[in-house]
Length: 246
Image (cartoon, rainbow, N blue to C red; front, side):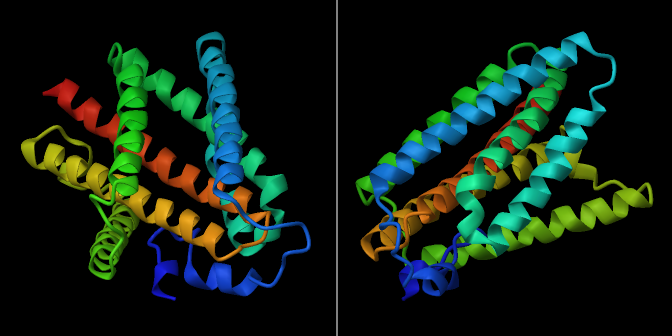
């Protein structure tokens, strides 16, 4: 059952095992997952366009950041715990994240002309490249590959958590936000790790469909892939902002 291992916390071996017997509404398919992923992306873009416009019209866009950021996090936690609710909550998560990303992207755009278009292009370009590398088996989700990406992802998560705690005491990690060479290299490494997570997500979706996961897992898997894509976009945006400051 090692194929079910993934460092995306949304897509785990025990996740499929716990619901493998629930086929009352059909089984998961790759085409169904792709369709639902496309729908969620449209929801994200629609909400992002709306909040981007609101950022230009309103002086206070903090509600969008709070509702999008905190609301999206809460929805994500609920979806992970109650996977069968994914068909109902995944679209809400996409809308919440879209509100957050729209305002944040507008802020970056105000500082660096063209940076958002570059980040979006690089995000989808990376997605397509990773999909090609996965489908052609140039990169395989082997046990060693999973272990390396899992370790790197966990290390990044711990580092970010530590940075948040230190920031509460007015202590900032020197290369997390600055544009020094070390800061740029750090962001580049994080972007690479986020991109490699896509390989594991593709493998998880393919394996879930092959093993006959329940139909609602198409929504759940799409949600998991969306989590990775949003992370990748934010890290690319951070990297580009550092390069623009150099």
